[in-house]
Each structure stands twice: as C-alpha cells, then as structure tokens.
Amino acid sequence: MSKTFGKDEVKAFAQLSGDHNPIHLDEVYASGTRFKRPLIHGMLVASMLSSTVASKLPGPGSIYMKQELNFIKPAYVGDTIRAEVVVESIVGSKILLKTTCIAISPETGDETVVISGPALVYHPDVKGSNNN
Image (tube, rainbow, N blue to C red; front, side, top):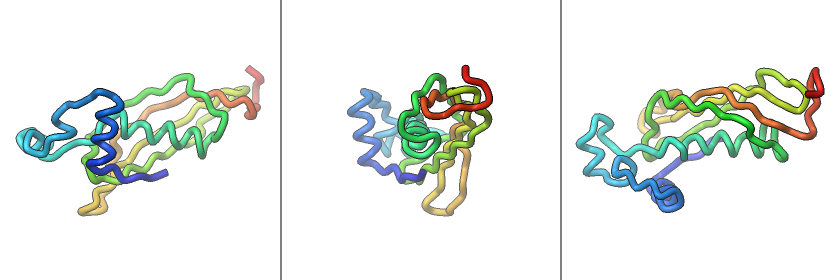
C-alpha cells in the first residue's frame, strides 16, 4: 500500500496524537535542524503497516500481537510512503511478518527504507503447520 503524506495529514495526526513537535509542523524551525525540512511523524509512517496488515496481508480479522519498529531514516512531509509486508512463517493462527516502510521522494523518485521490523499477527482464519 502507498500513501502520500502532506502538511494536512501531518497536522491532523498532530491533533489526534497530541504530538506537536515543531520538527513536524514548523518549516522555519525544521530548516534550522539537520533535517532542513519538516518530517512526517514516525508513528504516522508506521500506521501504514497497520493499514496493510488489516486490509491486505493477512487482511481483515488480523490482530496485532507484536510489532517491532526500527526507525532507520526520516520521512519528509510530501514523501509517498510504501508499506511492504511479507509472510515469514505461519504457526497455527500466528503469522510472523517482515514489515518495511519505504519513503519515495517526490523530487527525485529515490526510495529509502525508513522503518523496518518484524511483526506477529493473529488471524483466526489462518491455520499453519501447527495449530498453536
């Protein structure tokens, strides 16, 4: 799944989450940091993984049990975020996933891995090699 996060999405997330860090919302402030421009909230980027798990793989009925998030690089306001989920293994109704978020620069088209980490998901309709 992919989605572009602009200023409006970042502002809405700040309102919902209460995270009003100026690195996300204030272009002047961000220009004085090592990032030089506003960043998308890391947890907003990571929400793309939840969307993908819930709607695509494994899909509706999925329940998160665990998610490890390694924040590798920043994602910038205006970037398109692509969430990728790969099944690593299935044991009973538990599915181990490899999850990755990739930021795509609107200026250059360059792709950068910004978040990665494993996830463990329960799905009642999946029956793997062992019914645990």
